[in-house]
Length: 161
Image 1 (cartoon, rainbow, N blue to C red):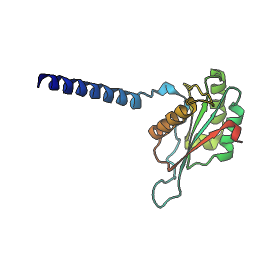
Image 2: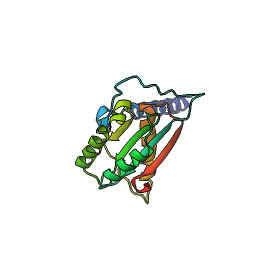
Image 3: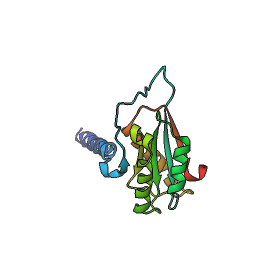
Image 4: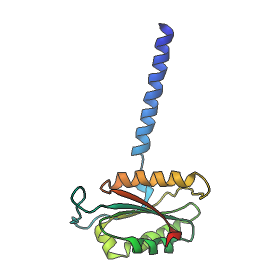
C-alpha cells in the first residue's frame, strides 16, 4: 500500500505541474508579443454569431523582405468584420516589422476598426519543417485570445498574392 501511495502522489504532482505549465503557456502572452495592436476608436456595428455572416481570422506570414507583399495581401483581403495577424519570420528585421506596423496604422479604416495586429516576437519558420505548423498553431491561439468572434481560420503567405 505504501508504494501505491507514492506512485499516486508522484502522478498527482506531475499532473499538477503539467497543468501549471499549460496555464502559464496560454496566459503568458505579454503585451510585448505584439509589435502593433490597434485599439478600436469606436464601438463597431459588426455583429458576430448565428444569424450574421461568418467572420474570418487571417494569419498572413512572410519572411525577410516581404513586408510590402504582406501589406498588399492584407489590403486585398481586408474586411472590417474579420481579424488579422501579420507575421514576419525571424529572418526579417525589427525595422521591417516596425515598417509593416506603420503601414497598417496609415490606413484609416484599419485604424478605425482596430482588427489588425503585427507579431512583435517572431517565430522561426522553415517551410520544409514543422516550424511552419507550430507558428500557425501559435497564431491560432493568439487570434483566439485577442478576439474569438471568428468562425473560420485562413492561413496565407506573402507569396499568395
